[in-house]
Length: 400
View: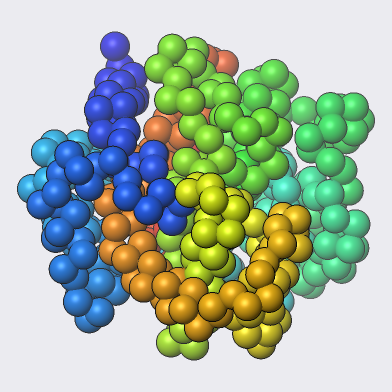
């Protein structure tokens, strides 16, 4: 049994053992079951001050240490299975290479380039957007590149952004989830390419893993992201045989938990987040009382403009979306206060499930890596950049 197998099985066993700590969201379940089985942890969460709480929300390492006495073995396992840092080396890029690339994305691409070792003279930039990643790697390593992107506007912009002496990068407008469309484009690509993807979302990166193995691509470098996106079914279906044998039955909500992290947020953004969540939870309590059903009701996302509507209008909007008749004399102020109190409680209680975010993400990452190994690849996992640059910093390198 390889280290990859052992790590995956350890992660699986631990997630199964502590399932009730991360399965039930306090946003949906007002009293998660773990509060009864571990009352000291519940009290520790609820006793947090407003100044202590954001420090734990913003620092996964501090959160793990804070939770460790109540969740034996979890912190030690995470330290053991967290991938090592990728080897980095300086890359020579022309001064204009980053024109048109947003600052954080620029840094992510630069870090990826410093870790990248090309295995073939041609790159395939999967779900490439404007082609920034492929073009940068082509600059750095004197390669040619092709980009696959569904959005024709992004393709058009990317085709004009070749930057002087940069190697030509051809962008192909195609839907990689459409087998026939992908086959047509693949037939025109150079034989034996190195596929790359930086933050390909959900089924888009799962499709890349399957396609690379089926096409016998020599090499693949992938940074997955946003695991719930493009998911065809309510329950996640693992790709690898080992993950299928130890299937956790992950739902879309579970996948959301794996990536539910914001690295930086301004004070204004934090206040907006507080307001919208408090209003949604205030409506949740109102609909429970109106319908007589003490259960969470999923509602549509709210536009940013909802911040200007006020609590009453937000409740009426959500009620219409779910065909609920609200009493005209609803105690709006009371439910608004209830929502604010609940959001304060939810933020504290959800620290517990947040303590399992990285293990869930590593479970998903290992499933991809194991699938590639089944396809005949030698696979290496690493971290390509610091969490402050992006929390989705896990890199899969696979080669035949």
